[in-house]
Length: 183
Image (tube, rainbow, N blue to C red; front, top):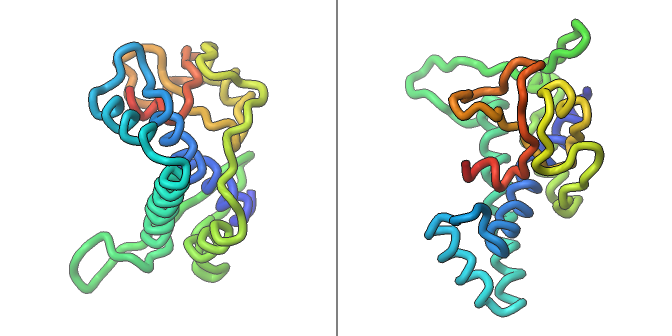
């Protein structure tokens, strides 16, 4: 994976997914008994004119992209996350097949700049469904092998007491990102 590939996948998995997931929640609040706040926001959104919906969607896009941009500024070390004169450094390392790549290497440019340029040059992409389908239940290994960076899905441990991704042979469910957050 290159830094460019990481930034492209990050945009799809974060700001693009946040935009489309939020719109989906506004149009159809998730769950059998949606939260009152979600129902209230849905009523508000559905009562907007088409032009006001486009403006609301543009504001959501701006907020989602700013949040990711701000996080990348932290990773790049251009935003402080601690007080005092001496600051620590964050290192984002991609590991695959025994090889390691420092993704936020200051000698190769800043992630936040590359992300910002990508946001300026491309529209948000809606999720694309490939091998793994929403609500599919299987082993973590099976679901991860079928996931794509553009499918808009997260894996959620089926056992409610699990707070992190379970071992590779454990059972998980593929959930749309907007619904995963609401759990």
